Amino acid sequence: MDRILVIDDDVPLTELLDECLRAEGFEVVAAHDGEGGVAEALAGGYALIVLDVMLPRMSGFEVLMRIRPQSPVPVLMLTARGDPVDRVTGLQMGADDYLPKPFNERELVARIQAILRRTKSAPIVPAADSASVLEVADLRLDPHSREVRVKGHLVDLTTVEFDVLRVLLASAGETVTREDLVRRALGRPFSVFDRSIDNHVSSLRRKLGPDAANAERIKTIRGAGYMYACTTIPSSRLPVR
Image 1: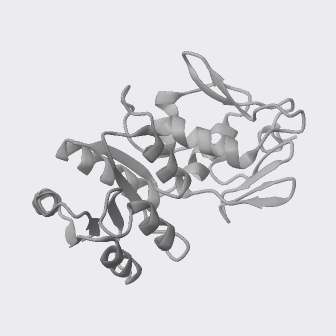
Image 2: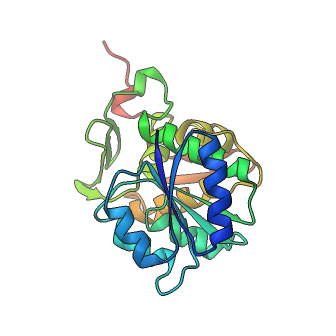
């Protein structure tokens, strides 16, 4: 039974989530302030944390900042009315996903299940690329060590950012639709109202920086999706002679 930690000062809401998540087979522990949430999270044993942004004495962002250097536990953040600033900030700090309040309990369960599927298994990428080191120009992604390097320098990516980049690199030079990217990297069905993939791509662009020609590595293909641009075919995709 997976244990989930809910950090939220809204007691009625945590009780509702407790009932909802237990019905799905999860064990739930609640913390109602930031300090208690940090202590509980670092005690370990949790498969996932549901973290509210608005907390007394310590914001959800501060909680995430204290948890992330010491634990890779997946974090789903609850944001007030889906504030875009909160969404971007949370994802850049290492959150795996977000859900705006108010939310549907069934959607929360679906998001949690998708995150757990993704963190417990490899992303859904073509078999030919599933174990290959992917290299495009000065960028190198190693799926075994889960390391990404640009010009030899290690780039610190979140678990989700790594999976998104891996899918894009596996199809470098080709358009990957937003629907396909969400399904393969995030492990859940695409929703037209879900902008999390766009925030992950934005964060990736910032962390990877421009290419040698000072152009964006990940291009937006209007009305279609995204493409990792390349002027040469990735070495891992060259035909074997």
